Length: 75
Image (tube, rainbow, N blue to C red):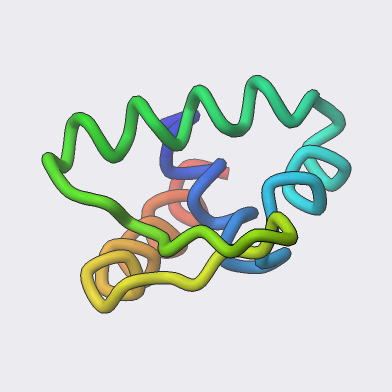
């Protein structure tokens, strides 16, 4: 569930640093969680930009919609 929460924050904030700040954790933890989630999905979920920004892929947007619903249900 932690991976899905992280995904929701990444989609909301648009950057690793923003998600980390919102989640009260470090960028390293957010990046590691994202890499783990991408490994489990066997595909990149975001396109990385030079200045730290993230652009979600279409699959990421689909997964993000489901992730928001799941996070809401268990909160």
